[in-house]
Length: 110
Length: 114
Image (cartoon, rainbow over all chains, first blue to last red; front, side, top):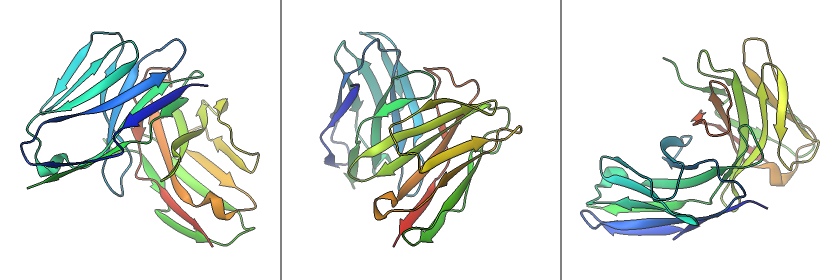
């Protein structure tokens, strides 16, 4: 069974304190690894898709990387507006069936 | 361009009732998928529709059903509601519904079953 596991479940950072979120996956025939951001009361919002080991993508203070077994979301010098739940996901079973991790709830304190 | 619209935003029902949730995808998007989100389980895939056909289904009981109309709008129905059905139900759309295509989510319908 395809699995996506995220750690930690919650992370509290001071503004400017860089850190990384982890996503490990067990998916047969990986066809991409997604990162989404979810704010309270809203649906997830797409951030990145990574396709192959060694690939990296950046957006503002976020950088996503991929290895053969896991992905990392690096947050550099975070600001309070980066506070959200970050979800990792992988397509599994065809079409739009996507397996999501439980998410990492990030809180950035001013 | 309008995003994915879900109605209603909040719903309170009692056990044994049934409920219908609605989703309007982004204009031009033909694939609509549904997810259930709970604090303990996270997002779980319910089903996906493309051109009025269900192409994929998750591991949920038959009480959960859906359909898609010719204008790509979709509805999902839950019959004989149980307490455990309380969750945020999210609809997502994409252009073709390809495996590695990014999803555009609505804000969800928060269902509470009493």
